[in-house]
Image (cartoon, rainbow, N blue to C red; front, top):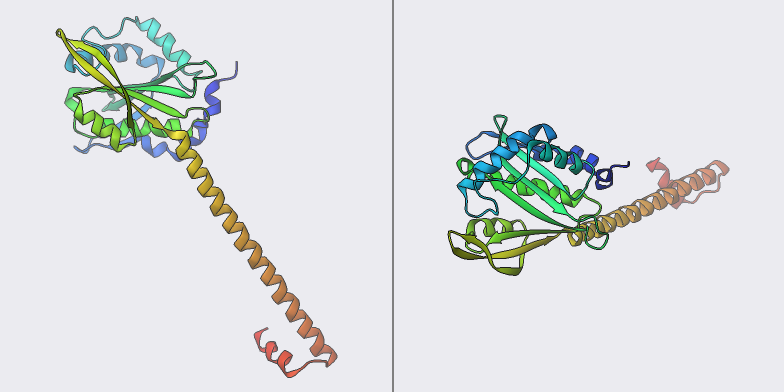
Length: 255
């Protein structure tokens, strides 16, 4: 079976954007981001329980997700074959401190949309982890052939996260009323989106324009060089035959 991920130009992403995988945090520790491997399944499930107990801004709680280690491994294996379903882990000192990912449909009419989710352990808040991880995922989506729109949902009172997403180009497009219910209290959820296909089209058009200008200048340059070479040989021929005016003799000093 042909792997769908091959359609995403992930090979070129790893070459040209590989430096995004490792970043220095504000406390100078090194953050390493990679696609989640099936071998990470057990650690990921334990992580989700911990992060779910630390924050009320996530859809999961201290129970984590209802998956066994084997089921999580199977899910991660399937993700290898998909371009719009990916899980990523960020590690510091080989320990998972952030889990994120994108999820989309295989239906032809809507597979260009993906939802993005991200979580970070409380001990690593305000160190730039979320910013680095978000940029990494956005760059992955930009290099994809098929992903055009990224959606993210965030609690309305999570001002820090909303500001981060806005700084990365996300726009508010809607709202779910009473989406979250925490300790019998309801919270609305903001829907935000980043349309990356428009950015790609703008970039492509700009590159094509630059290429056209370059080719035009190159063509003009070659054309002028041909004229100059032709004129010099013509003057040389006239000199050789003794049929040369004073004006033509003047050009001989340029040879």
